[in-house]
Image 1 (cartoon, rainbow, N blue to C red):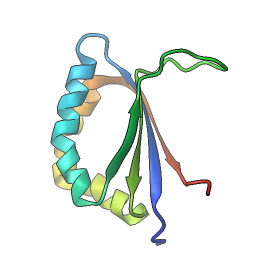
Image 2: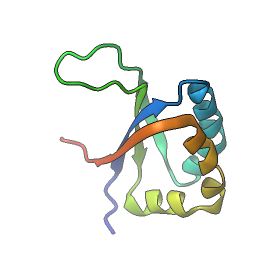
Image 3: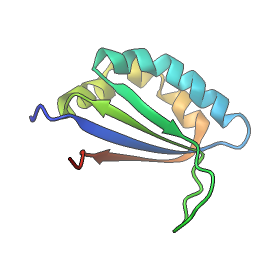
Length: 103
């Protein structure tokens, strides 16, 4: 497994009634676990307007992980697995896209 950092692009669509608040609960519960594996939330954005193409997501953010095995450890962690129902109750759809830097 490579020790190259990976970047996970998260694109989220919230449930209409309280989804954003439930997602904040999920982040509060899951973020300490992510930090344990070296996860670092870089930036977060609320899309405002489409200039080219269509994307009606509610939130977009990027998380940096030290390497793929760190991310895999996070996903497999029982403490993270236990809070997944919070995430599922908060969103209607999501994308998780692994990226690499274009340096």
